Image 1: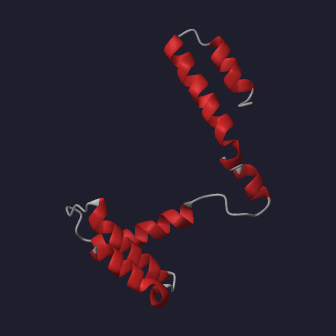
Image 2: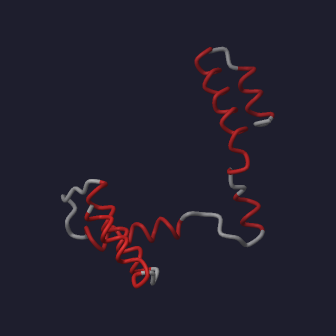
Amino acid sequence: MAGVRINWLIDSTKLTKSKDKLKKFSTYIDNNLTRIVDYRARKVKGLVFTSNLAESTVESLINQRCKGQQHMRWSREGLDPILQLRAKIHTNDWNDKWKSVVLNSVQ
């Protein structure tokens, strides 16, 4: 189901290791076909087709805390509560959500 090209690659590959990897990739595609985004179709329909907005938002939330402190290292556990708070503030959910975020980060 993954497609003619990948099947051609599998058939034409001589190395067993490469053939196994291609078969795994083909299986992955088949198993996740409904989740794979058709970016060309989304663009034609005028729908959002990139993650640039989400990535730039995350980048800005992180930079607000860490800007000017390039050498500072944050653990995932340390940075996550701060990012959760900043995300809530920027999405105007602060008044509804602040207690759950703050109380969860303290526990």
